[in-house]
Length: 128
Image (cartoon, rainbow, N blue to C red; front, side, top):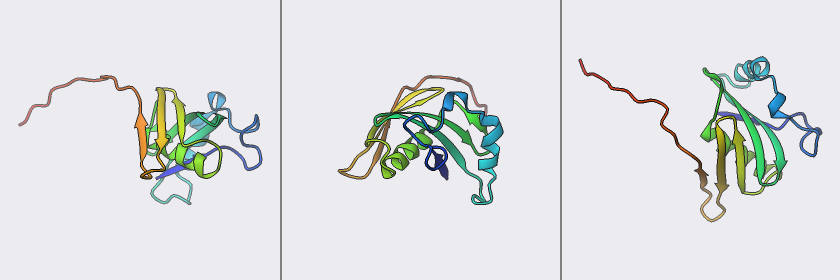
């Protein structure tokens, strides 16, 4: 599950919402992850709306903590932002690990994510 937050009600966007670059994620992330509202815990996306086509996001993933990126979280962010009238259906989501292009298509209601992929590890598994 994903919990997307834009900040306090009445203080979001237009200079009053979250500033994710200065967010103390290790201090607030665990309180969202383990909140009683989410008995199975939750991933939380902290979102700063820069404009209707560009948001910044940081994520606290359940069981992992702060991560560099979360594709499903970026998709959830755009859907939540569209439903709240904050962004358009095509939006760039900037994460610490790099930007993702997200589109929530009206034609078929699918969410499409486009972004870079890089090899980060290579290994060998031996069967016993």
